[in-house]
Length: 211
Image 1 (cartoon, rainbow, N blue to C red):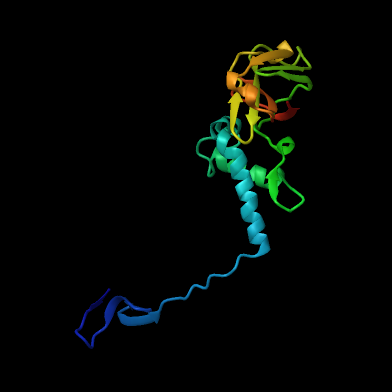
Image 2: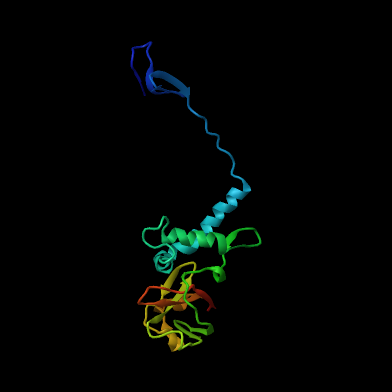
């Protein structure tokens, strides 16, 4: 709807059909509205959309865990949030393509936790239904009791569970009792990391394997 400011012969302000009227520096201006042509997306555009879908599909079920894992990459006051920082990293570093050129997140390239602490080497990983057993190299000269274990068991299609116990890094082994319904899950992707409970520092995660 437009407003006639000087009667039928006067200038108008607003939109009439495909034209719009307005005043600029005391002059009455009339211009046509721009036409937007819907173009077919390019192959590159489609690939990038699918890449972002793959990233979101992987990260969305573990959004709260990503807030923990990326809190030192995107601390409070940053221009981007933790989830956006993770999206950026995964988009650039964790995508592979299947035989039909469909992008997906390679679990071995995914970093769930980010940080600078040294990470012990995982030496064994075993699962018996809902019990997960993992061992790693101990370095008593490097870690004391306030370095704790971070452990994620991720069923990519459905759900995830974060170890919230008090196992110290120097323990060198852990038996983790998962929720009972996990016995139905055929593939769990395991990520291993270290957290300093005093400073909040952590290590990058390492992909321990699929069980």
